[in-house]
Every structure is written in C-alpha cells, then in structure tokens.
Length: 158
Image (cartoon, rainbow, N blue to C red; front, top):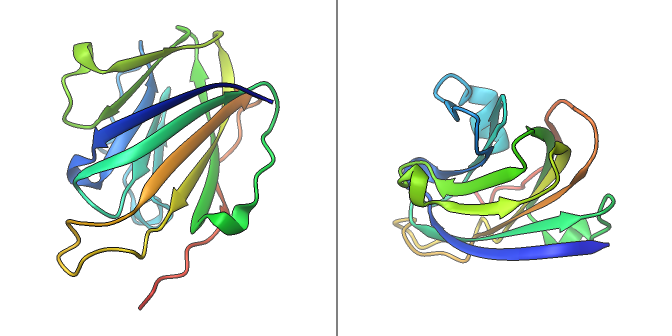
C-alpha cells in the first residue's frame, strides 16, 4: 500500500539525479560504468544515481510503500530495481550539482529499502534533446540488499 508520495522537479545536470542517505558521501564518480549508463542506474553505498535522457529539469516522483508495489509495467519504458540503505532515516533527493544542504529531504524509518525506478516517455524528446516528456518515479519499500537489475528494458526509437 502507498504510504507517502512526493513530487519534485529536479535539475538533471549531467543527465542524472541522486537519491541518497543523508549521511552517505554520494560519490558516484566511479559508479557510472558503461553498464550503469546503459541501465540509467548507478549505485554506491547509500546512494542511487538515476540516469536521465535530458540534462534539464525533469519531473520525479518518490513513493514510500509498506510492501512491494504492484504496477502495470507496460506503462513505463524501462524499470530497474536495486536497494539502498538509509540508516539515518533521512533521504536526500537532488540533482547532482544541487547545493546539498538545501536539497529536499524525505523522512523514513531507518532501514534497508528496495527501490524500483520507473522511467517514462524516454523517447519523446526534441531533436536537440532539451525538451521532452520524460519522467521518473522511484518506489521504495523495506526489503533486503539486492544487486541492481533491469526488470523491463527500454526499446530505443532508433
């Protein structure tokens, strides 16, 4: 069941934004491998980097659930799953160049969370890739540590 829902407009500079534990260092510099870029997902301790198709402001929804959500995956272009440890009980959601002390926070129970990242309308972009309808949603629920995996792979328009 959905417990909380948060809406953000984040500047996805360098085609990414972060969801991380407030106490984590958030350094994803070595995590953006070729495979991570392909997945649009990079992780390190306490931090998830979500790749985007534009480096502009993008809409992001974060949902907190009490159990694994059930959602029609056909509505999304790509869906990934991973986990994140939130020992501080405070999640920071921000663009990678945002000023960290002023970034938005979400209060949760300190725990390990499974995260399902939904990527929508990735192929609806202007030719210069500055305008688009791409949107992103992260559903979190208490779970266990898992390896990142693709649940649904994007099909490029090319």
